[in-house]
Length: 592
Figure 1 (cartoon, rainbow, N blue to C red):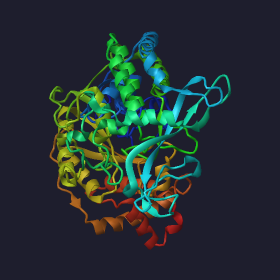
Figure 2: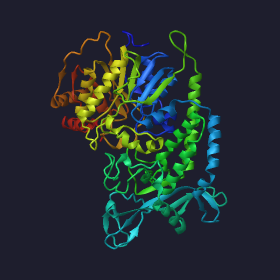
Figure 3: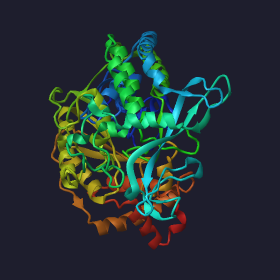
Figure 4: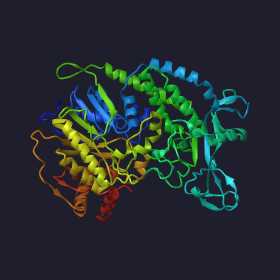
């Protein structure tokens, strides 16, 4: 393997070759993903075909996917059953012909169920299948008792304030939300009347029928659980938001009554598929469809139905109810392409140093990163992982909806995140992360590397991560960075978002096993002085780069260089770094 005394850390910036346009990104959503092309570069630098790669925070399974494409064996795991479910979907191969046959059978069984999406063409009265329905919160004015809904054509988002159309009184939307959602538009395509899809008002009869489903006992199935198992339905987690989740008591609250019933019936039909691999593939497509089939999809002017706020459980006042079957069909097509690619990877002939064919086989399972009891000491060639970034994403809460269908839940009390609801502080988070580092150290071979992709805005978290990494026994020869591709909307708009440029710790398990010597720790004030000097150098050295004036990029570079120092330094947050540069007269170099 590559963990010999001569191997050097990958001491250069790692670029994604395709980012979010890749097949990996398009098949199944997850709150955060590292492009497999980046992981593939890391894996191929530190290992040889046939070596064993470990990821104890596997998330979407990108490490397993990249290892499989590289002919490396892998052991990936996560505390979340949903993450493990996705990881299996990204690494298991199966026959696409069998997927097609099973899908045809499923749709035949559910033909009458699909007919519930039928609506009357407004021109010829022919029954056609609806593509989506626009739903609005219903508002009730306490001043004049008028009730009204939002008009998607007027560009009203419903956020913050709403104005009563009768008495012109302005209200906070959460104060006047009646708790009822109402369908107001339907989109369909009639082959007899139009060549394109049209959007029309929902008829009174159809509106009454759909609203009646909202009032029915849609939550009676065994898949409907109180959010985070909190029976009273209030303050169920850090994702809970006053003004948005007052009427959210359980999983079914995130769906229209019709879509919830259809999703339950679809899942139960998929459960009857006999072939395990085919069933896994179709259920993989199902969970990929869940959020797009929910009330979390915002009604945008383009009506593209692809927009929900990632990393949140936000319910917009104007939402799209999409046709579950159409969403599911689109996902299955993407899953088919993935399975074809995986089959191609398995057919490739990669040889180990002994001339043995390396297929990239692996194990996937639910496992606490602090307890890898099934792995022996000094048994892993390389560890690469993208652990939770503190409080940035609450995985147990975000994954609760799909885990309600899977049937097992994340052990939230053992999750390694900062969480106010569960009283997990930054210190406790770092202590838990330190335990995970110690376990990674135990299973890693002497001289082997661990690459930790990480980001945070807290100086205390950065210093704590390095402190606990060194305390676990690792040495830190390099800190570099990754560039995930084009900036997302959030990364462009919000200067505090640095997830496009993530630093990477490249730590090594020493061969001589000497204890880590005591090192200096700088105060936050001293760290800020160092940060100004380092940032000035970054601005001067990297002025030729297209994103050199981005505070996100500058912050990532400063963080990397401070962490590489033979000391514990507290890298400032992006906001603090921007202020420091402005105070130093270098604001012209920083993107606003």
